[in-house]
Image 1 (cartoon, one colour):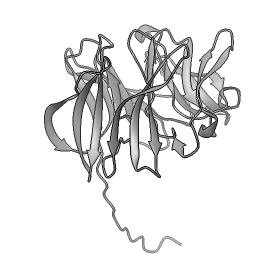
Image 2: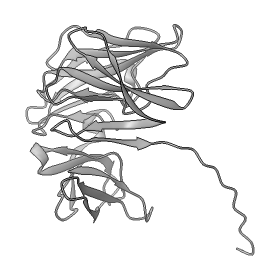
Image 3: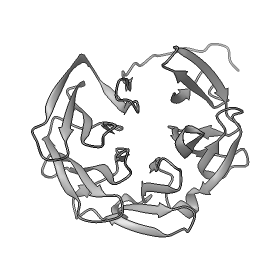
Length: 253
């Protein structure tokens, strides 16, 4: 199932759960002040999302997909970040960037509270974009390293338990990776990435063995939050468009 935010009522956070097998969709009101991009954990039996509880505590909220009940799983203070991050399939390991992302990317075992810094960006390198993606086998983390001085952005891979970070694909401005530009194929052998230039994205598959990347034919649009189903047959994404409106409100006092 695909889970995503629903904003019919800004005062009431909600999630939509879509079942691609039969095309059904249901909305789930969430007992929280707000939530951001949600993801499945515990092998699809629970949902985790950054947000804020009704009593004003920020952190990662664990959500019951049947009832919408949200409980605080870990505070942003304890995590040392309010960013989205990414979870292991069993919901026990969390990967994220520190709130001051110059401190790097970390791996946190939420049961033992053991924390390991995986990558500290060198001077001039920015890892601040929400582009963390964990391979389905749980062994490799993909992230973005942007170098504004060199006008480059790199899709980087690093072992999930720690090791050397290596670039898999580097692009040059004006081409960019928007947020959520990386997702893995089910066999953990390729990364799909949305490469965006002048507001139009292309989807490429990049083998992790260093073989040549290839473009996937896809309609021209601006793509973020790229996701691939566990069977590799369905792709989901957010088509991003910007629209401005000017409103006039009369006699409101």
